[in-house]
Image 1 (cartoon, rainbow, N blue to C red):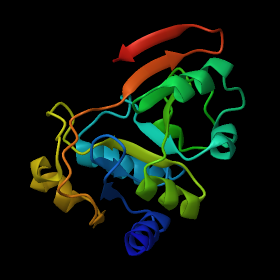
Image 2 (cartoon, rainbow, N blue to C red; image 1 turned 90 degrees about the vertical axis):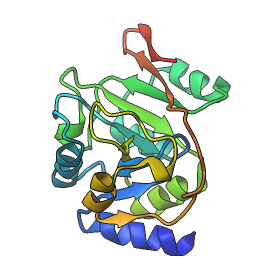
Image 3 (cartoon, rainbow, N blue to C red; image 1 turned 90 degrees about the horizontal axis):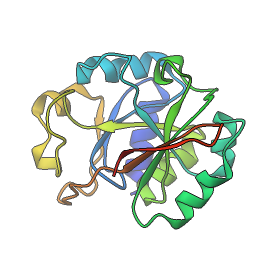
Length: 186
């Protein structure tokens, strides 16, 4: 795994995009603070920049670098959740502007999955995560289901967990600073 982390990090550090396993489905990712790399993902996915993507983070320090105010209920949801949960929080900062939604919110998921966690530990930055498909197409549940267009369109394919099947995307919940809660996807 260490070799894959080093390889992925070198690509990301140089503005590239990777195809990698997450705690949910396979993802396309890059440095969430690099607007040019984020734009490459939008182009590869044939996705409008108005459809925001999420970022993965590996802990409180990274979270507070991106969000000044994190509702207490966010930590409670993550603590109580028995499956990967993405929270959309208000007033994101210190990330690429083209990853922040028009309402200044950003979807974020805390991950413990070893590859993602250790990659971000090395990057010291959040990692973009969007499903490995062309926008509007079905989300692939296994590496073998990812289209050649996606595989050939990234700068690096991580060689881990390519035989794993995982058909579940994360739960998505929007939390606003004024305490409104809305479940987007169960």
